Image 1 (cartoon, one colour):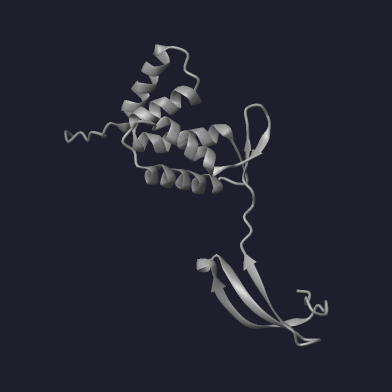
Image 2 (tube, rainbow, N blue to C red):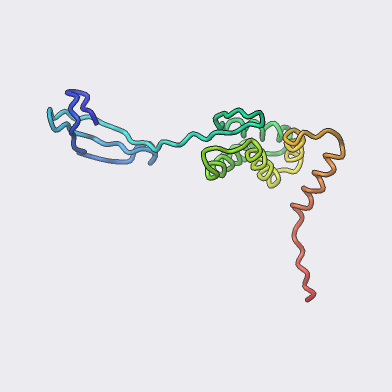
Length: 159
């Protein structure tokens, strides 16, 4: 680290402690040449997550778009805003584990999976736009898939 007083490159760390609720480390340093003291902060640098769109464009991932999409699908439904925020954060966390680049299909599928657990009407609204439904048969097919995926599994006790 270059000293802000004399531009010398050698220093020693005098004190280290967590800062910003553990998101950063604050270090007090002392220049070995002039004795000036200064503070530095270390933060984790996240690799930007990119989304490959159907058009071939690559755009930065934005959690706010997930939140907006879920909120639009849930409009008028009895879903708390914090549930929407938590779902968006959970989806973003899951997607980051997939790597630095993902497809818009992966994003849409992750949203659908969470909406399936939150609200079936919001799920159908999102699916109709995401999957580009053209007629009532598309809705019927998706409702059939939704009910099969969410009905409880029956255990046959006859053996």
